[in-house]
Length: 443
Image: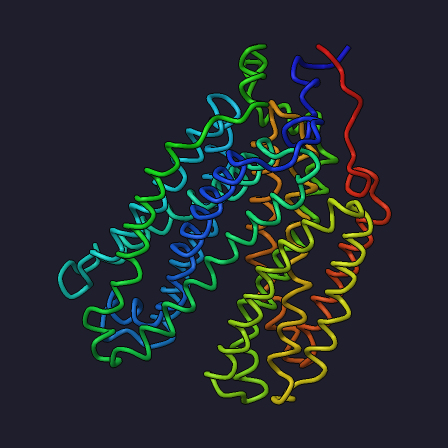
C-alpha cells in the first residue's frame, strides 16, 4: 500500500503509449516553446540594456560603480524571487491545474516587461522610479520561476513516451532561443540608433515589444488543453491530499538532490559559457566586442540546436549514454575552447562546438520531470530546480571571477568539472540513468 493516494502517478509523458507526435502535440509544443522564448527574452533583455537603465533610473551624481552595483542588484532580485514564485505557482499547478498556472506565469512576465518599457525615469519620479523597477523585476523573477518547470511538466505530460526526450529538448531549445532573441534585438538597436537616441527613448522598444508579444502569447495559451495525466488525477481526487511541498520534503528527497545537482551542471553551463564568456573574452584576451558577441550568438544557436539533438538522442539510446556523451563532451570541448584562446581564427568554430554540447542541459528536465509522481510533480521539479538555481546561479559568477584572478583557465576547469559530474550522475545514479520509474502502485 502506498503512503499517499497519488503514488500511482509516477508516469512519464502521456503514459506508456507509443504513438507518434500528432497535430495536437505539435500545437501544444509550438505554443509552449513560443511562450517560453518570449518569457525568457523578457527576463534577459534587461541585461543587454543594464547600463542605460542604470543611468536613467538612479541619481546622476552617483559614482559609476555604485550605479552599476544597484542596477545589478535589481537584476539579481529577479533571481532571488524565482524560488518563491516558482513554489507558489507550482503549488497551484499541482492543485488546480497545469494550464491555468502556465498561462498565469506568462501574464506575470508580460505585464511587468511592458511596464518597464513605459516607466518614467528618476528625473520624473525620483526615488519611486528605481523602486517600481525593482518591483517589476521581482514579479518577472516570480514568473520565470514558475514558467520553466511548468512548461517542462506541461509538455512532458502531453507527449507520447517514444518522443518524450525530443519534445522536452525542443521546448528547452525554445527557451534558450529567448536569449538569442534578446541579443539580436540588442545588436539591431545598437547598430540602428545612436547612443543618444537609445538613451532618450529607443531602449524602451525591446521591453514594449516583449510585453505586447507576451500578452499575445497569454491569449494563444487559451487554446491549449489541460494535460491528460492531471485530468486523470482530478477524477481520482488525488490532488486534494496535502500540501504538495510537504509530500516532496518527506518522500522525495532523493529526487530533489538529483534535480539540484543537475541544476548545478545546467546553471554552470549557461552562466559561464553563455552569459560570462563574452566579457571574459574581451577583458582577458582583448578580443573585440563585436567578435566576442558574434561568436556568442553562434554558440547560442548551436546550444539551441543541441537541446533538440540531445533530447532526440535520449529517445534513441537512453538517458545514461546520452548523459555520458553530452556532459562528458561538454567537459572535453570546454578545454578545447578555453585552452585555444585567443585563437581568433577558430574562435567561432570552437565556441559553437562547446555550445552544442552545452545543449545537453535539456537532460535536466528529461530526468527531472519523471523523478516525481504526477500529483506533486510540478512542485517537486520547481522546488528543487529553483532553489538550486538561486544558489548556484548566484554563486557561480562570483566563484569564477575570484578563481580567475589566480588561474586564467578557471572557467575551463569549472565547466569541465561540472561536465564530469553530469556524466557521473548518468553512469552511477539509477534514478537518473535508466529512465527510472517506480513500479505502479494503487493507493
